[in-house]
Amino acid sequence: MTIPLSSPDITQAEIDAVTAVLRTPRLSMGPELASFEAALADYHSVPHAVCVSSGAAGLHLALLTLGIGEGDQVIVPSFAFIAVANAVLQVRATPVFAEIDPVTLNLSPAGVERAVTPRTRAILVVHTFGVPAEMDALQTIARRHNLVLIEDACEAIGAQFGDQPDLRRAGCFGHLAVLGFYPNKQLTTGEGGAVLAHDPAHAARLRSLRNQGRSQARSGIGDWLDHAEHGYNYRLSELACALGRVQLSRIAEMLALRQAAAERYDALLRDRPVSGLELPPLTLPRRIISWFVYVVRLPEHVDRDRVHAALARRGIATGRYFAPIHLQPAWRRHPSAVVATLPLTESISRRTLALPFFNRIAASQQEEVAGALRDAIRSVI
Ligand SMILES: Cc1ncc(COP(=O)(O)O)c(C=O)c1O
Image (cartoon, rainbow, N blue to C red):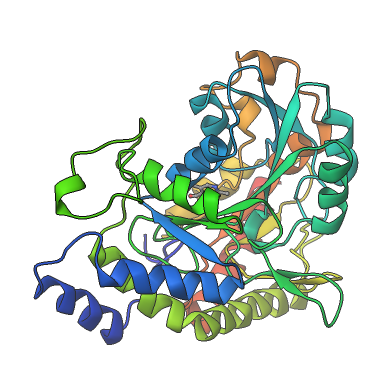
């Protein structure tokens, strides 16, 4: 593709930091891990950050750490990346798909309330596309029903929610929160993720589980083969942590570039509007958006796949963010999917298309995308 959907923003500083690690004997569990974790905790104003090998690994460990398991129900959105529901299956619990808010595209508090049953143990809320969910309302529901609240902030590093001046970063509201650092994300480590925790016992359990159940209390060379519980290899390498540490030091600059790119799309597409094409809101009350992707809603009855194909023929990549999880081949026969009644999720997801979006996207590339999108919509109407 001439214009990709996403592209990481790697400078000489990241290259230098990763190269410096390669000149040391310490390629895993070393000083870069400690400093990246400290910087992540500091950025989110939480006491603990535990790096893991992916966002999906983080979701798995968050559910395990909070004791979610067989017989439990976890409320999740279906308008989300598939790892969200898969993580619930991994711990043998049952996902209950709930409806979204049509503006923020996040779990709606009313949809969550409707999904609560006596078996509900947790709400797994995703800050979709970097737009924070209605966290105060969700916290209230969680407290009222005695549920744990897990944030999936994989798409939302740097987003904020709250009333001025008490805006807080996505990731500090839940009992645990998960970050993801895949290369399409605002901050990348190649592959990677982290879990943010308030409770030191949760942090200790996360550190043990990501490291094959090795007990933190008994550290040191002699204890490397002592395993206190069944765990996983979800460690993040020193190279990845060095990359993440430098990326995090540039996060304000990177989010500003993304904000500017979103504003440029907005201006370009509002300038000569296409009837029925809906743009994502640039601002939303009580929220600071961390732009992950730029997702438009095509006019009703326009075949999204034909628009996608028409743009691809012009070398422009687009993404179907998101095909609902409950309609995915992997899920649609699962009992949770069969009972899901999600008219908003289904109607919105038929229309959503992510446009090329990354820190260094040029204004000229965005003009080309906007022009091609207009042409493609007209050609398939
Ligand atoms: C909302 C959400 N949750 C979880 C994940 C899983 O992250 P990873 O791909 O790092 O496993 C992703 C993204 O890729 C995501 O967008």
